[in-house]
Amino acid sequence: MKSGCIRVLLVEAHAMVREALGILLGESPSIEVVALAVPGDEAAELAGRLSPDVVVTDAGSPEALAGMIRSCPPARVLVLSATEDSTAAIAAFRAGAKGYVTKHSSLQALIEAITCVARGGSFASPQLMRALFDSGSAPPTPGLTPRELQVLRLLASGKSSKEAAVALNVQTETLRTYRKQIMRKIQVNNAAGLTRFAMQAGLLPDSTPHRAPVERADAGGSGTAARQDRRRWLPACPP
Image 1: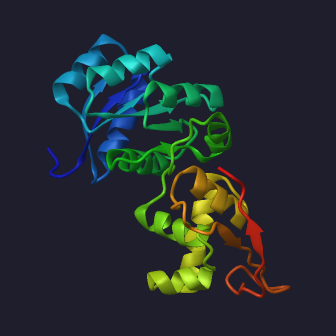
Image 2: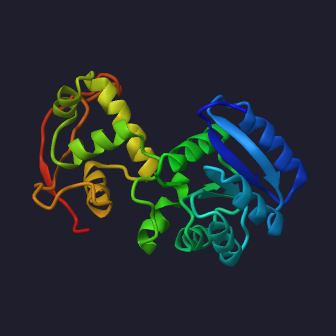
Image 3: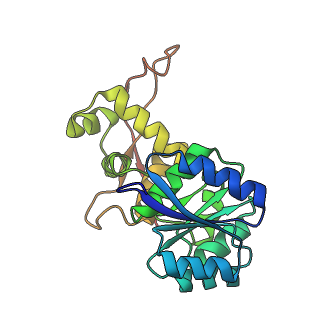
């Protein structure tokens, strides 16, 4: 038994996938796989008896997923699915799942999702985020770390990368790296998208002037040499 680890119940219909994934997850120092199960009564019984922190499941139907969630209310359920169909992801979140990861994702992405969900957050594979937001089913902060949330709030409230870096006592290039990571995770490609996302996710107080700075790199400069030449303010889209 690992001390202080995230206790995971892995539910998967295919034996080879179940056993291989159990071994791989078990090699993570932050995760303890407490049991492997096939979907159905066995999984529900183990969830109720073992009280895992996170149930990783290829749950099938929304009804089956809801049943799994009812069997162990304290556990947070993360769906691991072979399909990238946004309809399935929307149904999973509406049934009560806290995360949705496709089997096309890397092992590291799955570990990040488990960690995020275990800490009380929500997670979705980036390629599904646009459809989830359009449906109103998106998790509020999909896989963003606490530091990334700090960066997002600062940028969305109108601070430039340099100003946000000063506020967080980090280098400007470090701040820009965070910015790129956030934009990749939430599937936006400009500052207005960052602001809109923050507003939709409820990350900005109503009193905050929702303005977003747009930065342009020097002509012919590389990403690391980019600096703010000018600033223009864009009106934020309503949530």
